[in-house]
Image (cartoon, rainbow, N blue to C red; front, side, top):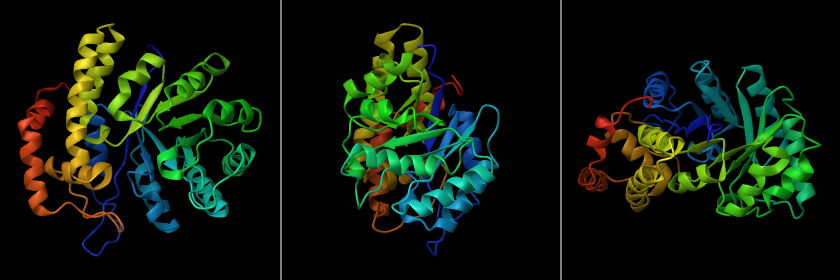
Length: 308
Protein backbone atom coordinates (compact mmCIF):
# COMPACT_ATOMS: atom_id res chain seq x y z
CA UNK A 1 0.00 0.00 0.00
CA UNK A 2 2.83 2.38 0.84
CA UNK A 3 4.56 1.82 -2.50
CA UNK A 4 1.71 3.23 -4.61
CA UNK A 5 2.89 6.67 -5.75
CA UNK A 6 1.90 7.43 -9.32
CA UNK A 7 -1.49 8.35 -10.76
CA UNK A 8 -0.61 9.19 -14.35
CA UNK A 9 -3.02 10.63 -16.91
CA UNK A 10 -2.83 9.29 -20.45
CA UNK A 11 -3.03 12.57 -22.34
CA UNK A 12 -5.35 13.53 -25.17
CA UNK A 13 -4.05 15.14 -28.35
CA UNK A 14 -5.68 18.44 -29.26
CA UNK A 15 -6.36 19.34 -32.91
CA UNK A 16 -7.33 22.59 -34.59
CA UNK A 17 -10.16 22.98 -37.07
CA UNK A 18 -7.90 21.82 -39.90
CA UNK A 19 -7.05 18.59 -38.12
CA UNK A 20 -3.48 19.63 -37.28
CA UNK A 21 -2.17 19.09 -33.76
CA UNK A 22 -2.63 22.04 -31.43
CA UNK A 23 -0.19 22.43 -28.54
CA UNK A 24 -1.69 25.70 -27.26
CA UNK A 25 -3.95 24.06 -24.62
CA UNK A 26 -1.10 22.07 -23.04
CA UNK A 27 -0.03 24.56 -20.31
CA UNK A 28 -3.62 24.98 -19.08
CA UNK A 29 -4.20 21.25 -19.48
CA UNK A 30 -1.09 20.43 -17.43
CA UNK A 31 -2.11 22.85 -14.70
CA UNK A 32 -5.55 21.21 -14.54
CA UNK A 33 -3.93 17.79 -14.07
CA UNK A 34 -1.51 19.03 -11.42
CA UNK A 35 -4.34 20.66 -9.44
CA UNK A 36 -6.58 17.63 -9.71
CA UNK A 37 -4.10 15.21 -8.18
CA UNK A 38 -2.42 13.55 -11.18
CA UNK A 39 1.28 12.95 -10.61
CA UNK A 40 2.31 12.80 -14.25
CA UNK A 41 1.36 12.13 -17.85
CA UNK A 42 1.86 9.42 -20.45
CA UNK A 43 2.09 11.19 -23.81
CA UNK A 44 1.36 9.80 -27.31
CA UNK A 45 -0.15 6.56 -26.08
CA UNK A 46 -3.50 4.99 -26.97
CA UNK A 47 -5.58 7.85 -25.53
CA UNK A 48 -3.35 10.35 -27.34
CA UNK A 49 -3.86 8.55 -30.68
CA UNK A 50 -0.09 8.15 -30.84
CA UNK A 51 -0.03 5.65 -33.70
CA UNK A 52 -2.23 7.99 -35.77
CA UNK A 53 0.32 10.79 -35.52
CA UNK A 54 3.38 11.53 -37.64
CA UNK A 55 6.84 11.29 -36.12
CA UNK A 56 7.21 15.07 -36.22
CA UNK A 57 3.85 15.52 -34.50
CA UNK A 58 4.83 13.11 -31.76
CA UNK A 59 8.12 14.93 -31.22
CA UNK A 60 6.35 18.29 -31.03
CA UNK A 61 3.88 17.01 -28.45
CA UNK A 62 6.66 15.41 -26.41
CA UNK A 63 8.62 18.66 -26.39
CA UNK A 64 5.57 20.66 -25.32
CA UNK A 65 4.74 18.32 -22.46
CA UNK A 66 8.31 18.08 -21.16
CA UNK A 67 8.17 21.83 -20.55
CA UNK A 68 5.46 21.12 -17.95
CA UNK A 69 7.33 18.52 -15.91
CA UNK A 70 8.44 19.13 -12.34
CA UNK A 71 9.59 17.39 -9.18
CA UNK A 72 6.06 16.14 -8.50
CA UNK A 73 4.89 15.80 -12.09
CA UNK A 74 6.60 13.24 -14.32
CA UNK A 75 6.41 13.14 -18.11
CA UNK A 76 6.61 9.70 -19.72
CA UNK A 77 6.64 9.43 -23.51
CA UNK A 78 5.24 6.53 -25.51
CA UNK A 79 7.74 5.83 -28.32
CA UNK A 80 6.27 2.63 -29.74
CA UNK A 81 5.95 2.27 -33.50
CA UNK A 82 5.52 -0.56 -36.00
CA UNK A 83 8.88 0.51 -37.45
CA UNK A 84 11.70 -0.27 -35.04
CA UNK A 85 13.77 2.49 -36.68
CA UNK A 86 11.12 5.11 -35.97
CA UNK A 87 10.72 3.85 -32.41
CA UNK A 88 14.47 4.24 -31.89
CA UNK A 89 14.33 7.78 -33.26
CA UNK A 90 11.53 8.65 -30.83
CA UNK A 91 13.39 7.07 -27.91
CA UNK A 92 16.55 9.07 -28.66
CA UNK A 93 14.47 12.23 -28.99
CA UNK A 94 12.82 11.63 -25.61
CA UNK A 95 16.29 11.34 -24.06
CA UNK A 96 17.46 14.52 -25.76
CA UNK A 97 14.55 16.56 -24.40
CA UNK A 98 15.03 15.04 -20.93
CA UNK A 99 11.74 13.18 -20.53
CA UNK A 100 11.39 11.27 -17.26
CA UNK A 101 10.94 7.92 -18.97
CA UNK A 102 9.71 6.11 -22.07
CA UNK A 103 7.48 3.19 -22.89
CA UNK A 104 6.55 1.21 -25.97
CA UNK A 105 3.86 -1.24 -26.94
CA UNK A 106 4.72 -4.10 -29.25
CA UNK A 107 4.23 -3.92 -33.03
CA UNK A 108 0.58 -4.13 -34.04
CA UNK A 109 0.80 -5.48 -37.61
CA UNK A 110 3.75 -7.86 -38.00
CA UNK A 111 3.47 -9.31 -34.52
CA UNK A 112 6.19 -11.32 -32.76
CA UNK A 113 5.52 -15.06 -32.89
CA UNK A 114 7.87 -15.84 -30.04
CA UNK A 115 8.59 -14.03 -26.79
CA UNK A 116 12.26 -13.66 -27.69
CA UNK A 117 11.20 -11.58 -30.73
CA UNK A 118 9.21 -9.23 -28.50
CA UNK A 119 12.16 -8.90 -26.15
CA UNK A 120 14.51 -8.23 -29.08
CA UNK A 121 12.13 -5.49 -30.23
CA UNK A 122 12.04 -3.87 -26.79
CA UNK A 123 15.78 -4.19 -26.29
CA UNK A 124 16.43 -2.28 -29.51
CA UNK A 125 14.20 0.57 -28.35
CA UNK A 126 15.37 0.68 -24.73
CA UNK A 127 19.03 0.67 -25.73
CA UNK A 128 18.43 3.78 -27.85
CA UNK A 129 17.84 5.75 -24.64
CA UNK A 130 19.88 3.80 -22.06
CA UNK A 131 19.73 6.50 -19.40
CA UNK A 132 15.92 6.68 -19.35
CA UNK A 133 13.66 4.33 -17.37
CA UNK A 134 11.90 2.01 -19.82
CA UNK A 135 8.43 0.46 -19.57
CA UNK A 136 6.98 -2.22 -21.79
CA UNK A 137 3.39 -1.27 -22.62
CA UNK A 138 1.31 -4.45 -22.36
CA UNK A 139 -2.06 -3.88 -24.05
CA UNK A 140 -3.10 -7.15 -25.73
CA UNK A 141 -6.60 -5.88 -26.57
CA UNK A 142 -5.00 -3.46 -29.05
CA UNK A 143 -1.80 -5.19 -30.14
CA UNK A 144 -2.97 -8.81 -30.09
CA UNK A 145 0.30 -9.76 -28.33
CA UNK A 146 -0.71 -12.27 -25.67
CA UNK A 147 2.50 -13.38 -23.96
CA UNK A 148 2.55 -13.73 -20.18
CA UNK A 149 4.26 -10.71 -18.69
CA UNK A 150 5.91 -12.71 -15.93
CA UNK A 151 7.71 -14.63 -18.69
CA UNK A 152 8.64 -11.31 -20.27
CA UNK A 153 10.16 -10.05 -17.01
CA UNK A 154 12.02 -13.26 -16.35
CA UNK A 155 13.68 -13.17 -19.76
CA UNK A 156 14.03 -9.42 -20.28
CA UNK A 157 15.36 -8.52 -16.83
CA UNK A 158 18.94 -9.41 -17.68
CA UNK A 159 18.88 -7.90 -21.15
CA UNK A 160 17.33 -4.46 -20.59
CA UNK A 161 19.39 -2.67 -17.92
CA UNK A 162 17.04 0.32 -17.91
CA UNK A 163 13.83 -1.74 -17.69
CA UNK A 164 11.77 0.01 -15.03
CA UNK A 165 8.59 -2.04 -15.30
CA UNK A 166 5.41 -2.68 -17.25
CA UNK A 167 2.38 -0.60 -18.09
CA UNK A 168 -0.03 -3.47 -17.52
CA UNK A 169 -3.25 -2.88 -19.48
CA UNK A 170 -4.35 -6.49 -19.46
CA UNK A 171 -7.05 -8.45 -17.65
CA UNK A 172 -4.97 -11.38 -16.37
CA UNK A 173 -4.66 -10.42 -12.72
CA UNK A 174 -2.76 -13.58 -11.82
CA UNK A 175 -0.09 -12.62 -14.34
CA UNK A 176 -0.05 -9.06 -13.01
CA UNK A 177 0.39 -10.26 -9.42
CA UNK A 178 3.27 -12.49 -10.51
CA UNK A 179 4.91 -9.42 -12.05
CA UNK A 180 4.38 -7.41 -8.85
CA UNK A 181 6.10 -10.14 -6.84
CA UNK A 182 8.95 -10.76 -9.27
CA UNK A 183 12.39 -10.30 -7.69
CA UNK A 184 10.84 -8.98 -4.47
CA UNK A 185 8.97 -6.19 -6.24
CA UNK A 186 11.95 -4.79 -8.12
CA UNK A 187 9.90 -3.65 -11.12
CA UNK A 188 7.17 -1.04 -11.17
CA UNK A 189 3.88 -2.41 -12.42
CA UNK A 190 1.64 0.43 -13.56
CA UNK A 191 -2.02 -0.56 -13.62
CA UNK A 192 -3.79 0.28 -16.88
CA UNK A 193 -7.44 -0.56 -16.20
CA UNK A 194 -9.12 2.35 -14.43
CA UNK A 195 -12.35 0.40 -13.89
CA UNK A 196 -10.58 -2.10 -11.62
CA UNK A 197 -7.88 0.04 -10.01
CA UNK A 198 -8.92 -1.22 -6.59
CA UNK A 199 -8.03 -4.75 -7.68
CA UNK A 200 -4.61 -3.52 -8.71
CA UNK A 201 -4.09 -1.80 -5.36
CA UNK A 202 -4.95 -5.01 -3.51
CA UNK A 203 -2.41 -6.88 -5.65
CA UNK A 204 0.32 -4.33 -4.95
CA UNK A 205 0.75 -2.23 -8.11
CA UNK A 206 3.00 0.80 -7.67
CA UNK A 207 1.13 3.21 -9.92
CA UNK A 208 -1.53 3.57 -12.57
CA UNK A 209 -1.84 5.09 -16.03
CA UNK A 210 -5.28 5.75 -17.50
CA UNK A 211 -7.47 8.04 -19.54
CA UNK A 212 -10.09 8.76 -16.87
CA UNK A 213 -7.44 10.28 -14.60
CA UNK A 214 -7.73 13.30 -16.89
CA UNK A 215 -11.03 14.17 -15.23
CA UNK A 216 -11.49 11.69 -12.35
CA UNK A 217 -8.13 12.02 -10.60
CA UNK A 218 -9.73 13.54 -7.45
CA UNK A 219 -12.13 10.60 -7.23
CA UNK A 220 -9.36 8.06 -7.64
CA UNK A 221 -7.19 9.87 -5.11
CA UNK A 222 -10.05 9.39 -2.64
CA UNK A 223 -10.14 5.70 -3.55
CA UNK A 224 -6.38 5.41 -2.99
CA UNK A 225 -6.56 7.32 0.29
CA UNK A 226 -9.35 5.07 1.59
CA UNK A 227 -7.39 1.98 0.58
CA UNK A 228 -4.19 3.17 2.25
CA UNK A 229 -6.12 3.84 5.47
CA UNK A 230 -7.52 0.30 5.37
CA UNK A 231 -11.11 1.35 4.67
CA UNK A 232 -11.95 -1.10 1.87
CA UNK A 233 -15.67 -0.37 2.10
CA UNK A 234 -15.11 3.28 1.26
CA UNK A 235 -12.54 2.40 -1.42
CA UNK A 236 -15.07 0.06 -3.01
CA UNK A 237 -17.66 2.86 -2.98
CA UNK A 238 -15.30 5.15 -4.92
CA UNK A 239 -14.49 2.38 -7.39
CA UNK A 240 -18.21 1.80 -7.96
CA UNK A 241 -18.74 5.52 -8.63
CA UNK A 242 -15.93 5.41 -11.18
CA UNK A 243 -17.43 2.34 -12.85
CA UNK A 244 -20.81 4.06 -13.24
CA UNK A 245 -19.12 6.99 -14.99
CA UNK A 246 -16.99 4.70 -17.15
CA UNK A 247 -20.12 2.82 -18.29
CA UNK A 248 -21.47 6.12 -19.62
CA UNK A 249 -18.10 6.91 -21.19
CA UNK A 250 -18.20 3.61 -23.10
CA UNK A 251 -21.73 4.36 -24.26
CA UNK A 252 -20.50 7.57 -25.93
CA UNK A 253 -17.52 6.32 -27.87
CA UNK A 254 -15.11 5.17 -25.20
CA UNK A 255 -11.84 6.55 -23.90
CA UNK A 256 -10.84 8.74 -26.87
CA UNK A 257 -13.96 10.31 -28.38
CA UNK A 258 -16.11 10.02 -25.25
CA UNK A 259 -13.26 11.17 -23.07
CA UNK A 260 -12.59 14.19 -25.25
CA UNK A 261 -16.28 15.07 -25.03
CA UNK A 262 -16.12 14.92 -21.23
CA UNK A 263 -13.02 17.11 -21.21
CA UNK A 264 -14.94 19.62 -23.30
CA UNK A 265 -17.75 19.59 -20.74
CA UNK A 266 -15.32 20.55 -17.98
CA UNK A 267 -13.82 23.35 -20.06
CA UNK A 268 -10.93 21.80 -21.99
CA UNK A 269 -11.74 21.56 -25.70
CA UNK A 270 -9.40 19.46 -27.81
CA UNK A 271 -11.18 19.31 -31.17
CA UNK A 272 -12.31 16.19 -33.00
CA UNK A 273 -10.32 12.94 -32.92
CA UNK A 274 -8.33 11.97 -35.99
CA UNK A 275 -9.81 9.37 -38.33
CA UNK A 276 -10.69 6.54 -38.07
CA UNK A 277 -11.99 7.58 -34.63
CA UNK A 278 -15.37 9.32 -34.82
CA UNK A 279 -16.30 12.42 -32.87
CA UNK A 280 -19.26 12.57 -30.51
CA UNK A 281 -22.07 14.55 -32.14
CA UNK A 282 -23.49 17.73 -30.56
CA UNK A 283 -26.73 15.90 -29.80
CA UNK A 284 -24.82 13.06 -28.16
CA UNK A 285 -22.86 15.57 -26.07
CA UNK A 286 -26.16 16.97 -24.75
CA UNK A 287 -27.24 13.47 -23.80
CA UNK A 288 -23.83 12.76 -22.30
CA UNK A 289 -24.05 15.87 -20.14
CA UNK A 290 -27.54 14.86 -19.00
CA UNK A 291 -26.46 11.33 -18.03
CA UNK A 292 -23.36 12.53 -16.21
CA UNK A 293 -25.41 15.16 -14.41
CA UNK A 294 -27.88 12.50 -13.30
CA UNK A 295 -24.95 10.68 -11.63
CA UNK A 296 -23.84 13.87 -9.90
CA UNK A 297 -20.63 13.91 -11.91
CA UNK A 298 -20.12 17.67 -11.98
CA UNK A 299 -21.01 18.11 -8.30
CA UNK A 300 -18.74 15.21 -7.46
CA UNK A 301 -15.72 16.90 -9.01
CA UNK A 302 -16.60 20.22 -7.41
CA UNK A 303 -17.01 18.72 -3.95
CA UNK A 304 -13.94 16.49 -3.95
CA UNK A 305 -10.75 17.89 -2.40
CA UNK A 306 -7.90 18.63 -4.80
CA UNK A 307 -4.63 16.73 -4.33
CA UNK A 308 -6.24 14.44 -1.77
